[in-house]
Amino acid sequence: MDFAQKCFGREITVIRKSLNEIIKLSDEQKKQLAQEVRAFYLDVRGEEIGIIEEQQIIDLFCEYMAPIVYNRALDDAQRFFKMQMDNLEADFYLLYKNMR
Image (cartoon, rainbow, N blue to C red; front, side, top):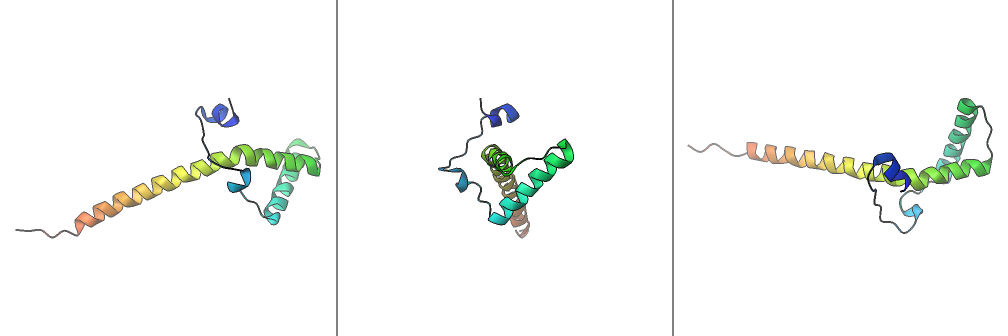
């Protein structure tokens, strides 16, 4: 059982050739994330971690969380577009003229 199954109780399927096809971070984003991880460990846990640990944590989250977040975003987009299409269909029928 993988991380997603443990967290959500269902299989999360993401078709990808490599992790970089799902999430690509710029150097600036990687640097910012590393700072955030470092600050979290220092502020919340009172521990200092090194560059290797920072990168391992970022890699772990990218590997396990990126597909979950990506799939959730797709689900949200699908719901949004379905709602918009429902509204469009209702608006379309309002355009009909009454025939007597």
